[in-house]
Length: 160
Picture 1 (cartoon, rainbow, N blue to C red):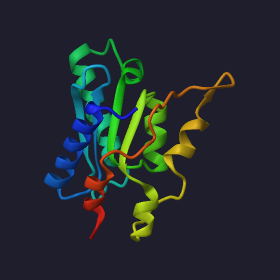
Picture 2 (cartoon, rainbow, N blue to C red):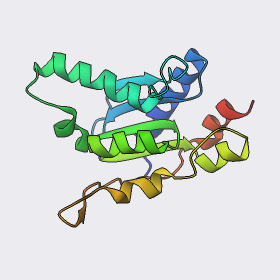
Picture 3 (cartoon, one colour):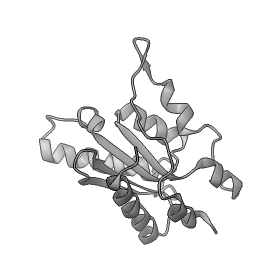
């Protein structure tokens, strides 16, 4: 279920998007406490793979390495963390989130909304990508939330 931490993180992602002048942004937080541990702003104009979600994961990886001296990894910590993004993740970001093993993903604006406004997007949605992660015949991701939260706010980022 969507909770107060999701809303807090989405507002922060919205602020990052506004500050960076780029509508794609993401935040990672501890699911139990709501503590934001990493943020990411899209810099795909410099490098096409540096989407907000990827930047947040990269930034968090750096933080984890410094904090734990290499004794822990994203793979170990991600199941107890949520990734919140201003928009539904593209297939590349969905795969990165899937490989990382995040326990939850929450987004604002949907891919359909972006497509309806002429944005270049894949029609493969995050909801289609996540169930494709299988190990030993079992779906390995327990992505609880795949719903839009505060999309009324994030949609304004994409209304140009």
